[in-house]
Image 1: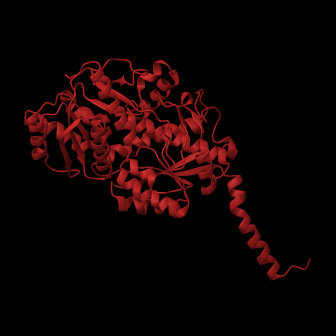
Image 2: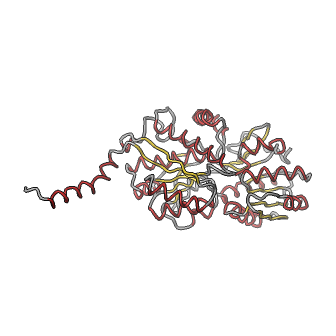
Image 3: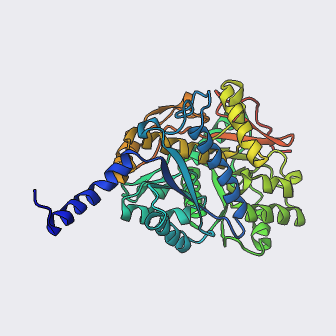
Length: 414
Protein backbone atom coordinates (compact mmCIF):
# COMPACT_ATOMS: atom_id res chain seq x y z
CA UNK A 1 0.00 0.00 0.00
CA UNK A 2 1.35 3.40 -0.98
CA UNK A 3 2.14 5.50 2.08
CA UNK A 4 0.48 8.88 1.74
CA UNK A 5 0.15 11.75 4.18
CA UNK A 6 -3.57 10.95 4.40
CA UNK A 7 -2.85 7.31 5.36
CA UNK A 8 -0.36 8.45 7.98
CA UNK A 9 -2.91 10.83 9.47
CA UNK A 10 -5.65 8.19 9.45
CA UNK A 11 -3.35 5.70 11.11
CA UNK A 12 -2.38 8.24 13.74
CA UNK A 13 -6.02 9.06 14.39
CA UNK A 14 -6.90 5.40 14.81
CA UNK A 15 -4.00 4.89 17.19
CA UNK A 16 -5.08 7.93 19.20
CA UNK A 17 -8.64 6.66 19.38
CA UNK A 18 -7.47 3.32 20.70
CA UNK A 19 -4.98 4.80 23.16
CA UNK A 20 -7.44 5.35 26.01
CA UNK A 21 -8.65 1.77 25.72
CA UNK A 22 -5.13 0.40 25.63
CA UNK A 23 -3.98 2.47 28.60
CA UNK A 24 -7.11 1.54 30.52
CA UNK A 25 -6.55 -2.16 30.00
CA UNK A 26 -2.88 -1.89 30.99
CA UNK A 27 -3.19 0.83 33.63
CA UNK A 28 -0.79 0.53 36.56
CA UNK A 29 -2.77 2.82 38.84
CA UNK A 30 -6.34 3.88 39.51
CA UNK A 31 -6.62 7.55 40.48
CA UNK A 32 -9.34 8.51 42.97
CA UNK A 33 -10.09 12.04 44.17
CA UNK A 34 -10.56 12.56 47.92
CA UNK A 35 -12.11 15.89 48.86
CA UNK A 36 -12.17 17.17 52.47
CA UNK A 37 -11.49 20.27 54.58
CA UNK A 38 -7.72 20.44 55.10
CA UNK A 39 -7.69 24.05 56.27
CA UNK A 40 -9.95 26.15 58.47
CA UNK A 41 -11.93 25.16 61.56
CA UNK A 42 -12.66 21.62 60.31
CA UNK A 43 -9.11 20.85 59.12
CA UNK A 44 -8.65 18.04 61.66
CA UNK A 45 -11.54 16.21 60.01
CA UNK A 46 -9.58 16.21 56.76
CA UNK A 47 -6.38 15.05 58.46
CA UNK A 48 -8.19 12.14 60.11
CA UNK A 49 -9.99 11.28 56.86
CA UNK A 50 -6.69 11.19 54.98
CA UNK A 51 -5.33 8.64 57.47
CA UNK A 52 -8.46 6.50 57.06
CA UNK A 53 -8.22 6.52 53.27
CA UNK A 54 -4.49 5.82 53.33
CA UNK A 55 -5.15 2.84 55.60
CA UNK A 56 -7.73 1.48 53.15
CA UNK A 57 -5.43 2.08 50.16
CA UNK A 58 -2.60 0.26 51.92
CA UNK A 59 -4.82 -2.76 52.52
CA UNK A 60 -5.91 -2.77 48.87
CA UNK A 61 -2.46 -2.17 47.39
CA UNK A 62 -0.55 -4.64 49.58
CA UNK A 63 -1.23 -8.22 50.62
CA UNK A 64 -3.10 -8.65 53.93
CA UNK A 65 -4.73 -11.73 55.39
CA UNK A 66 -8.08 -10.13 56.20
CA UNK A 67 -11.54 -11.36 55.28
CA UNK A 68 -12.17 -8.04 53.56
CA UNK A 69 -12.69 -7.25 49.86
CA UNK A 70 -9.36 -6.78 48.02
CA UNK A 71 -7.23 -7.37 51.14
CA UNK A 72 -5.64 -10.58 49.88
CA UNK A 73 -3.24 -10.06 47.00
CA UNK A 74 -1.87 -6.76 45.75
CA UNK A 75 -3.87 -4.11 43.91
CA UNK A 76 -6.97 -4.68 41.79
CA UNK A 77 -6.88 -8.08 40.07
CA UNK A 78 -9.62 -6.99 37.68
CA UNK A 79 -7.21 -4.38 36.33
CA UNK A 80 -4.08 -6.50 36.28
CA UNK A 81 -2.99 -5.62 39.81
CA UNK A 82 -3.30 -1.84 39.32
CA UNK A 83 -2.74 0.13 42.51
CA UNK A 84 -4.98 2.79 44.02
CA UNK A 85 -3.54 6.31 44.01
CA UNK A 86 -5.33 8.97 46.03
CA UNK A 87 -5.33 12.66 45.12
CA UNK A 88 -6.40 14.90 48.01
CA UNK A 89 -8.19 18.23 47.58
CA UNK A 90 -9.09 20.90 50.15
CA UNK A 91 -12.67 22.23 49.97
CA UNK A 92 -12.16 24.44 53.06
CA UNK A 93 -15.74 23.65 54.22
CA UNK A 94 -16.98 25.89 51.37
CA UNK A 95 -19.53 24.38 48.94
CA UNK A 96 -18.33 26.58 46.06
CA UNK A 97 -14.69 25.73 46.70
CA UNK A 98 -15.81 22.10 46.75
CA UNK A 99 -17.44 22.55 43.36
CA UNK A 100 -14.24 24.02 41.91
CA UNK A 101 -11.99 21.36 43.44
CA UNK A 102 -14.20 18.54 42.18
CA UNK A 103 -13.98 19.95 38.67
CA UNK A 104 -10.20 20.27 38.97
CA UNK A 105 -9.87 16.68 40.17
CA UNK A 106 -11.90 15.44 37.21
CA UNK A 107 -10.52 17.61 34.41
CA UNK A 108 -6.88 18.03 35.49
CA UNK A 109 -6.06 15.14 37.80
CA UNK A 110 -8.13 12.75 35.64
CA UNK A 111 -9.63 10.89 38.59
CA UNK A 112 -12.05 8.07 37.78
CA UNK A 113 -14.14 8.62 40.93
CA UNK A 114 -14.47 11.06 43.82
CA UNK A 115 -15.08 10.33 47.51
CA UNK A 116 -15.82 12.72 50.39
CA UNK A 117 -16.73 15.16 51.94
CA UNK A 118 -17.54 15.41 55.70
CA UNK A 119 -19.89 18.42 55.39
CA UNK A 120 -23.18 17.54 53.66
CA UNK A 121 -23.45 21.07 52.25
CA UNK A 122 -20.25 20.45 50.28
CA UNK A 123 -21.47 17.03 49.13
CA UNK A 124 -24.36 18.80 47.38
CA UNK A 125 -22.11 20.74 45.00
CA UNK A 126 -19.41 18.07 44.60
CA UNK A 127 -21.95 15.42 43.63
CA UNK A 128 -23.53 17.78 41.08
CA UNK A 129 -20.17 18.27 39.35
CA UNK A 130 -19.53 14.51 39.37
CA UNK A 131 -22.97 13.94 37.85
CA UNK A 132 -22.26 16.45 35.08
CA UNK A 133 -19.02 14.69 34.12
CA UNK A 134 -20.34 11.14 34.57
CA UNK A 135 -17.89 10.40 37.40
CA UNK A 136 -19.08 8.29 40.36
CA UNK A 137 -19.25 10.07 43.73
CA UNK A 138 -19.16 8.00 46.93
CA UNK A 139 -20.68 9.93 49.82
CA UNK A 140 -18.63 8.21 52.49
CA UNK A 141 -19.63 10.12 55.62
CA UNK A 142 -22.39 12.61 54.69
CA UNK A 143 -25.61 11.92 56.57
CA UNK A 144 -28.23 14.39 55.26
CA UNK A 145 -31.19 12.29 54.03
CA UNK A 146 -31.95 14.61 51.10
CA UNK A 147 -28.61 13.91 49.41
CA UNK A 148 -29.63 10.63 47.79
CA UNK A 149 -33.08 11.90 46.77
CA UNK A 150 -32.03 14.31 44.03
CA UNK A 151 -32.28 11.93 41.10
CA UNK A 152 -28.51 11.59 40.61
CA UNK A 153 -27.27 8.49 38.77
CA UNK A 154 -23.67 8.69 39.97
CA UNK A 155 -24.32 9.23 43.71
CA UNK A 156 -23.73 6.33 46.15
CA UNK A 157 -23.81 6.27 49.97
CA UNK A 158 -22.76 3.02 51.72
CA UNK A 159 -23.45 4.33 55.27
CA UNK A 160 -26.69 5.32 57.07
CA UNK A 161 -28.32 8.74 56.81
CA UNK A 162 -29.88 10.79 59.60
CA UNK A 163 -33.39 9.38 59.22
CA UNK A 164 -31.93 5.93 59.89
CA UNK A 165 -29.79 7.25 62.75
CA UNK A 166 -32.68 9.22 64.29
CA UNK A 167 -35.02 6.23 64.05
CA UNK A 168 -32.49 4.23 66.09
CA UNK A 169 -32.53 6.98 68.74
CA UNK A 170 -36.32 6.90 69.02
CA UNK A 171 -36.36 3.09 69.06
CA UNK A 172 -33.95 3.40 71.99
CA UNK A 173 -36.23 5.89 73.78
CA UNK A 174 -39.21 3.58 73.27
CA UNK A 175 -37.22 0.66 74.68
CA UNK A 176 -36.20 2.65 77.76
CA UNK A 177 -39.79 3.73 78.35
CA UNK A 178 -40.87 0.10 78.31
CA UNK A 179 -38.34 -0.47 81.10
CA UNK A 180 -39.91 2.30 83.16
CA UNK A 181 -37.68 5.28 82.36
CA UNK A 182 -39.35 8.69 82.17
CA UNK A 183 -38.79 10.21 78.74
CA UNK A 184 -41.49 12.68 77.77
CA UNK A 185 -39.82 15.89 76.54
CA UNK A 186 -37.07 16.58 74.01
CA UNK A 187 -35.01 19.65 73.11
CA UNK A 188 -33.73 19.78 69.52
CA UNK A 189 -30.60 21.86 68.90
CA UNK A 190 -29.20 22.00 65.37
CA UNK A 191 -26.95 24.12 63.18
CA UNK A 192 -28.32 25.84 60.08
CA UNK A 193 -26.60 24.04 57.19
CA UNK A 194 -28.18 21.07 55.39
CA UNK A 195 -26.83 18.64 58.02
CA UNK A 196 -28.47 20.33 61.00
CA UNK A 197 -31.61 21.34 59.15
CA UNK A 198 -32.30 17.84 57.79
CA UNK A 199 -31.52 16.32 61.19
CA UNK A 200 -33.82 18.72 63.06
CA UNK A 201 -36.69 18.18 60.63
CA UNK A 202 -36.32 14.40 60.86
CA UNK A 203 -36.24 14.40 64.66
CA UNK A 204 -39.23 16.75 64.92
CA UNK A 205 -41.29 14.43 62.69
CA UNK A 206 -40.26 11.32 64.64
CA UNK A 207 -41.07 13.02 67.95
CA UNK A 208 -44.54 13.86 66.73
CA UNK A 209 -45.07 10.37 65.31
CA UNK A 210 -43.86 8.64 68.49
CA UNK A 211 -45.63 10.89 71.00
CA UNK A 212 -42.72 12.84 72.49
CA UNK A 213 -43.14 16.53 73.34
CA UNK A 214 -40.61 18.90 71.75
CA UNK A 215 -40.18 21.69 74.31
CA UNK A 216 -37.42 23.49 72.38
CA UNK A 217 -36.49 23.42 68.68
CA UNK A 218 -33.49 25.70 68.27
CA UNK A 219 -31.70 26.34 64.99
CA UNK A 220 -28.46 28.29 65.44
CA UNK A 221 -25.90 29.75 63.06
CA UNK A 222 -23.06 27.32 62.33
CA UNK A 223 -19.70 28.47 63.73
CA UNK A 224 -21.47 31.04 65.89
CA UNK A 225 -19.15 33.00 68.21
CA UNK A 226 -21.65 32.70 71.08
CA UNK A 227 -24.38 30.27 72.08
CA UNK A 228 -25.32 31.96 75.33
CA UNK A 229 -28.87 32.91 74.32
CA UNK A 230 -29.53 29.45 72.89
CA UNK A 231 -28.24 27.66 76.01
CA UNK A 232 -30.41 29.89 78.20
CA UNK A 233 -33.42 28.67 76.18
CA UNK A 234 -32.33 25.05 76.60
CA UNK A 235 -31.87 25.51 80.34
CA UNK A 236 -35.33 27.05 80.67
CA UNK A 237 -36.91 24.20 78.67
CA UNK A 238 -35.19 21.57 80.88
CA UNK A 239 -36.09 18.67 78.58
CA UNK A 240 -35.63 15.03 79.52
CA UNK A 241 -33.26 14.65 76.54
CA UNK A 242 -31.14 17.21 74.68
CA UNK A 243 -30.58 16.19 71.02
CA UNK A 244 -27.79 18.25 69.41
CA UNK A 245 -26.75 18.16 65.74
CA UNK A 246 -23.47 20.11 65.76
CA UNK A 247 -20.03 19.99 64.17
CA UNK A 248 -16.94 19.96 66.39
CA UNK A 249 -16.29 23.64 67.12
CA UNK A 250 -19.98 24.21 67.85
CA UNK A 251 -20.17 21.11 70.06
CA UNK A 252 -17.24 22.31 72.16
CA UNK A 253 -18.73 25.80 72.48
CA UNK A 254 -22.13 24.34 73.42
CA UNK A 255 -20.69 22.21 76.23
CA UNK A 256 -18.51 25.04 77.56
CA UNK A 257 -21.47 27.44 77.52
CA UNK A 258 -23.71 24.93 79.33
CA UNK A 259 -21.07 24.64 82.07
CA UNK A 260 -20.73 28.41 82.36
CA UNK A 261 -24.50 28.84 82.70
CA UNK A 262 -24.94 25.94 85.12
CA UNK A 263 -27.02 23.81 82.74
CA UNK A 264 -26.49 20.07 83.01
CA UNK A 265 -28.96 18.14 80.84
CA UNK A 266 -30.48 14.98 82.26
CA UNK A 267 -29.37 13.22 79.09
CA UNK A 268 -27.70 14.06 75.77
CA UNK A 269 -28.31 11.93 72.68
CA UNK A 270 -26.28 13.45 69.86
CA UNK A 271 -26.36 13.22 66.08
CA UNK A 272 -22.69 12.23 65.92
CA UNK A 273 -20.54 14.87 64.11
CA UNK A 274 -18.79 16.89 66.84
CA UNK A 275 -19.94 14.46 69.53
CA UNK A 276 -17.92 11.62 68.00
CA UNK A 277 -14.69 13.58 67.61
CA UNK A 278 -11.64 13.11 69.82
CA UNK A 279 -11.06 16.89 69.76
CA UNK A 280 -14.36 17.43 71.58
CA UNK A 281 -13.50 14.96 74.32
CA UNK A 282 -9.97 16.32 74.65
CA UNK A 283 -11.48 19.78 75.21
CA UNK A 284 -14.59 19.08 77.31
CA UNK A 285 -14.74 15.32 77.89
CA UNK A 286 -14.88 15.81 81.66
CA UNK A 287 -18.31 17.39 81.16
CA UNK A 288 -19.61 14.68 78.83
CA UNK A 289 -19.56 11.53 80.94
CA UNK A 290 -22.57 9.49 79.89
CA UNK A 291 -23.28 11.31 76.63
CA UNK A 292 -24.78 9.08 73.94
CA UNK A 293 -24.02 9.45 70.23
CA UNK A 294 -25.36 7.56 67.30
CA UNK A 295 -22.89 5.79 65.06
CA UNK A 296 -22.36 3.26 62.33
CA UNK A 297 -19.24 1.67 63.82
CA UNK A 298 -18.45 -0.10 67.08
CA UNK A 299 -14.94 -1.10 68.08
CA UNK A 300 -16.65 -3.63 70.37
CA UNK A 301 -17.25 -5.65 67.20
CA UNK A 302 -13.57 -6.67 67.37
CA UNK A 303 -14.53 -9.16 70.09
CA UNK A 304 -16.60 -11.10 67.54
CA UNK A 305 -14.63 -10.14 64.42
CA UNK A 306 -10.89 -9.91 65.25
CA UNK A 307 -10.14 -8.38 61.84
CA UNK A 308 -11.80 -5.16 63.07
CA UNK A 309 -9.26 -4.78 65.85
CA UNK A 310 -6.31 -5.56 63.59
CA UNK A 311 -7.36 -3.01 60.97
CA UNK A 312 -8.02 -0.48 63.73
CA UNK A 313 -4.42 -1.03 64.87
CA UNK A 314 -3.21 -0.10 61.38
CA UNK A 315 -5.27 3.08 61.46
CA UNK A 316 -4.06 3.88 64.97
CA UNK A 317 -0.44 3.53 63.86
CA UNK A 318 -1.04 6.24 61.24
CA UNK A 319 -3.29 8.57 63.20
CA UNK A 320 -2.76 7.98 66.92
CA UNK A 321 -6.53 7.42 67.19
CA UNK A 322 -9.01 4.56 67.11
CA UNK A 323 -11.56 4.41 64.32
CA UNK A 324 -14.67 6.45 65.09
CA UNK A 325 -17.99 6.78 63.30
CA UNK A 326 -16.54 9.05 60.62
CA UNK A 327 -13.17 7.44 59.93
CA UNK A 328 -14.68 3.95 59.82
CA UNK A 329 -17.20 5.11 57.21
CA UNK A 330 -14.41 6.73 55.20
CA UNK A 331 -12.35 3.54 55.30
CA UNK A 332 -15.29 1.40 54.18
CA UNK A 333 -16.27 3.94 51.52
CA UNK A 334 -12.98 3.44 49.71
CA UNK A 335 -13.14 -0.35 50.08
CA UNK A 336 -16.65 -0.35 48.54
CA UNK A 337 -15.57 1.94 45.69
CA UNK A 338 -12.42 -0.05 44.91
CA UNK A 339 -14.36 -3.32 44.99
CA UNK A 340 -16.71 -1.92 42.34
CA UNK A 341 -13.85 -0.60 40.17
CA UNK A 342 -12.27 -4.04 40.36
CA UNK A 343 -15.49 -5.71 39.18
CA UNK A 344 -15.90 -3.08 36.46
CA UNK A 345 -12.41 -3.97 35.18
CA UNK A 346 -12.32 -0.39 33.97
CA UNK A 347 -11.77 3.22 34.97
CA UNK A 348 -14.66 4.34 32.78
CA UNK A 349 -17.22 6.28 34.83
CA UNK A 350 -20.31 4.57 33.44
CA UNK A 351 -18.85 1.09 33.94
CA UNK A 352 -17.89 1.93 37.53
CA UNK A 353 -21.39 3.32 38.10
CA UNK A 354 -22.92 0.07 36.84
CA UNK A 355 -20.63 -1.96 39.10
CA UNK A 356 -21.50 0.19 42.14
CA UNK A 357 -25.20 -0.27 41.39
CA UNK A 358 -24.66 -4.05 41.40
CA UNK A 359 -22.69 -4.09 44.69
CA UNK A 360 -23.68 -6.74 47.22
CA UNK A 361 -21.09 -7.14 50.01
CA UNK A 362 -22.05 -9.24 53.07
CA UNK A 363 -21.73 -7.38 56.34
CA UNK A 364 -19.44 -9.97 57.91
CA UNK A 365 -16.65 -9.12 55.46
CA UNK A 366 -16.70 -5.43 56.44
CA UNK A 367 -15.52 -3.69 59.61
CA UNK A 368 -19.08 -2.46 60.27
CA UNK A 369 -22.06 -3.94 62.17
CA UNK A 370 -24.12 -3.83 58.95
CA UNK A 371 -26.20 -6.53 57.27
CA UNK A 372 -24.57 -5.80 53.92
CA UNK A 373 -23.70 -3.10 51.38
CA UNK A 374 -26.29 -3.03 48.62
CA UNK A 375 -27.55 0.14 46.98
CA UNK A 376 -31.15 0.95 46.12
CA UNK A 377 -32.15 2.78 42.93
CA UNK A 378 -31.18 6.12 44.54
CA UNK A 379 -27.70 4.97 45.56
CA UNK A 380 -28.48 4.47 49.27
CA UNK A 381 -27.50 1.41 51.28
CA UNK A 382 -30.52 0.67 53.47
CA UNK A 383 -28.82 -2.25 55.24
CA UNK A 384 -26.30 -0.11 57.14
CA UNK A 385 -27.59 -0.67 60.66
CA UNK A 386 -26.88 2.19 63.11
CA UNK A 387 -25.72 1.72 66.69
CA UNK A 388 -25.83 3.94 69.77
CA UNK A 389 -22.64 4.46 71.77
CA UNK A 390 -22.23 5.86 75.30
CA UNK A 391 -19.13 7.65 76.56
CA UNK A 392 -18.27 5.89 79.81
CA UNK A 393 -14.91 5.75 81.57
CA UNK A 394 -13.18 7.71 78.83
CA UNK A 395 -14.31 5.49 75.94
CA UNK A 396 -17.40 4.67 73.89
CA UNK A 397 -19.28 1.41 74.48
CA UNK A 398 -22.16 0.03 72.42
CA UNK A 399 -25.51 0.18 74.24
CA UNK A 400 -28.07 -0.29 71.42
CA UNK A 401 -29.50 -2.24 69.67
CA UNK A 402 -29.67 -5.07 72.18
CA UNK A 403 -28.24 -7.72 69.84
CA UNK A 404 -24.91 -5.86 69.53
CA UNK A 405 -24.85 -4.07 72.92
CA UNK A 406 -21.99 -4.82 75.32
CA UNK A 407 -23.37 -2.71 78.18
CA UNK A 408 -26.64 -1.31 79.48
CA UNK A 409 -27.24 2.40 79.11
CA UNK A 410 -26.45 4.62 82.08
CA UNK A 411 -29.65 6.70 82.32
CA UNK A 412 -29.80 9.46 83.32
CA UNK A 413 -26.27 10.38 82.29
CA UNK A 414 -23.74 10.88 85.08
